[in-house]
Length: 342
Image (cartoon, rainbow, N blue to C red):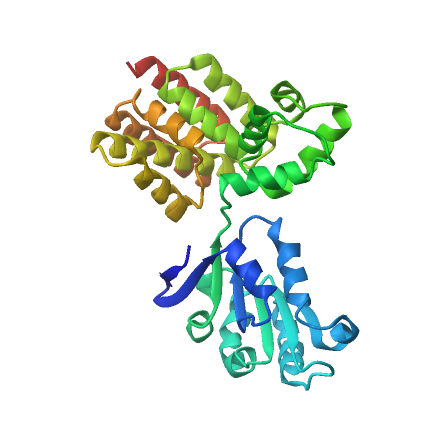
């Protein structure tokens, strides 16, 4: 998905993570790539891709990685301004770009955008100077199609087989995080000695907080109290921060709200899929999309809006120190809500 979007008034070319990696590995890379915070699984892949632009014999001279603090700025400028030792191309990776360093980066624009430089920034696009951002390929969307994720999983099974339902269960429990799926596949291979079943995945793979929050919202909308409480228990055992849990539940409620609006207006389900991809960077497969629309049919629009308002009150209480435990507040809210929804 390629387009032009705005951050702090700056326009930039927004590409998918797949497009960016393919471009980095090509014979004609762009001068600048900006990877916004996202799935950490892609960080080493992006570094490997930009490193491949420099012949291995010259990487000690023409490839460099720097932390983006102010104490690195002069070294970054010196590296960019020096002559190439090898093929004529230099590659630079900068991580953790600070606000002050980002401001000074504008002065490096002529060096960074030179035709013989490939620069990779891991940074919030809002921090990148406009003159650089407007010329960059920017990754804000780490969604990968459901078919591609399934293919990725099967390629890592060391020749073993896995039930289709088990593949879907793994994707759901890890919220399609490649970083999580990689470690969980290793656990499943060690735990089993034949075809991996959905029961195996349910036994071995815990739900991450993102997946548990989605199940929680769906269970509330369907008035499934026991399932909602199990999802809440999954959230408790996930070890996630209160702010992350509240954010995940809020995102789930917003998906439910938009599913309700889509179904009420008889708009095609593709509209909901496009909204989730554009605003939440989630690529919904048909199964998840159908479940979301079904859940939306079981709850009134005003009840979803009321839940979002009360969730904002909980967030405010946590941030101001008026409440000490988001999960306790959520449990109290959901208990009242499930009893109220017809």
